Length: 270
Image (cartoon, rainbow, N blue to C red; front, side, top):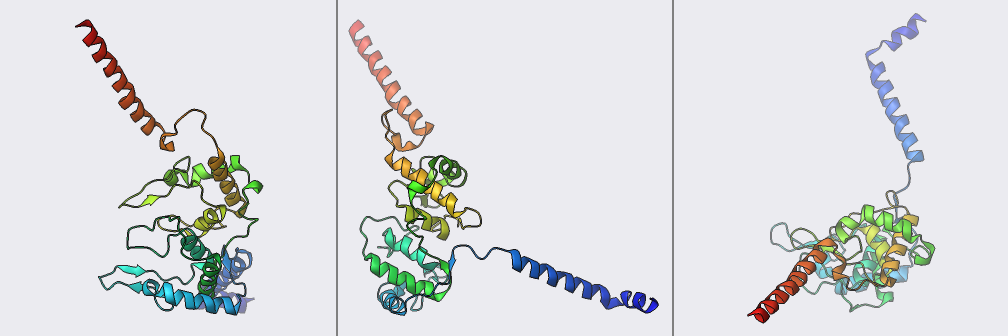
């Protein structure tokens, strides 16, 4: 008993106990912690990866580097194109599927374009190549972005809590700092809404499955879909910008009409 007590009082005992406690804590966390959200490690067709690599080097490497490692412009710390390792196929599908990439000219933000320069097959091949470089968010399934399977009422609540401060309560978009902006979300496909949430393009934060669950994303998509189909029986939406545009309209046109009436009555009395 005395020998055991002596060992407990050994100077190294406390250090050993701390190391053992840290090891057990780390092992327990690794066992119960969720896996990285939205990451894909699925096997990709070799032919699709090779086709995507060839397309990437022909069309994207001038900005993003020959192996998607990123490229600097040579002007200090300015970057022509960031590294794409780990962005996943979802980022490629969003950026190229919405016409944001390739950019026509350097700018503070890549705008959405109606003209898509690549076919769905070409975009999928480039996405497969980028996904082969490192795990990243994958393109969501059709079922995951089906608006008919979501709850638009709950999606509206989630949207107002997580998205409305930038995109406006009706998804009309809004201004940010230094010439950047949160784009309008009207007529955006559910797939691209989902991809934007898991990849965080431009200034948008990443909403992975740890903070916004897949079913929550589907509800938000359902809400935005109802906004696209919603009619406005009250008249002009005035950009859906709320009391600012409505108040400006009242002051400019309402007071303008009153002034015009006052001038007309004054001319009659004279």
